[in-house]
Image 1 (cartoon, rainbow, N blue to C red):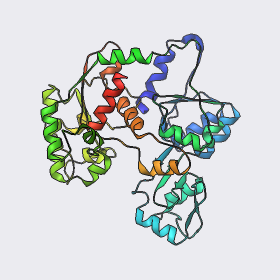
Image 2 (image 1 turned 120 degrees about the vertical axis):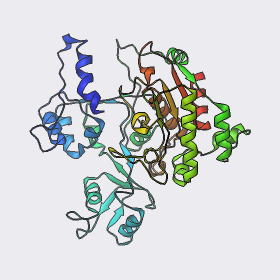
Image 3 (image 1 turned 45 degrees about the vertical axis):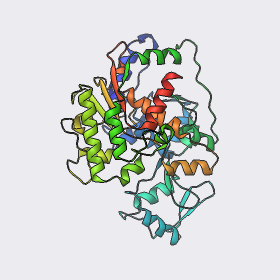
Image 4 (image 1 turned 90 degrees about the vertical axis):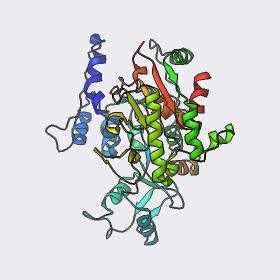
Length: 396
């Protein structure tokens, strides 16, 4: 994230003054864009630090300088090398039209080709989609049901070495993506770098996390939402609080959810300043950098406004929330079907439980848990499936 790019390198490198390494941040000053500044730094062989988003936007232009200077690329957490194409960029109805008219066709490996110069020119509605197709970053499932956007894999191949600092990599979307692109991997080993033992980490974590099941409050909500409570297996299989569930949820169900979050927060004795919660961004009223205060399905949590408490479910690599000592996770996570179907068509397998667990752990670790010997964090996980995954992981 941008906040870390600007501060972390200097803080960490100050501990090792003898190394003499300096990282430069592309700010865009004196250049049309930050991307142009990044390319200039790479073309001069500079050590560079930038956000995930800026790196992912390099495209083919970044291949030559990365290869020329034999760069080692270090990713702090997984990168979204493959993401679903937003309906806001290309609506499903428009996809059908483009396929029917032969404007786009799909190659065997899934790459979308643009075949008609009369479409997608200038500032037309299809201009951005055409650019993606011609840049080699737009892909489709075989039946054209789902589209996804991919970072040109040559940017990865161009580096002398790529180091990914992450957790629960097996079964992840990134692992599947690299597999179908023919890029192998192995566990990171570096003499002199002491990584924390996982068993020791979990033991310490148990002393720092206070799980709030709130059975009376939670089971009452689940029963109203017609989620089985007595049948434990069925309860964990239920899709409540998934993206699909939120899409089909009625206004009154969102009201109940908002009341539940408020009730649990009060049981935790949480304040708006030290509480954080997560669910789909649009339900929280998040629209880019703006907050929507009212809407048919915009969550309202009296006393705990999302501006103070909401944190995106996939948040990673940020210390901006280390003051949070109460957390409510209200999102039943699955990898996006547009990504899963494409990967499976090409021989990769995504582990939905592993995906959900990895994202939830990353989210929980944005709290005060990040502070060594810091305060305890109260955690409530609303989805029975997600709660089971977290507890099972903690006890393994």
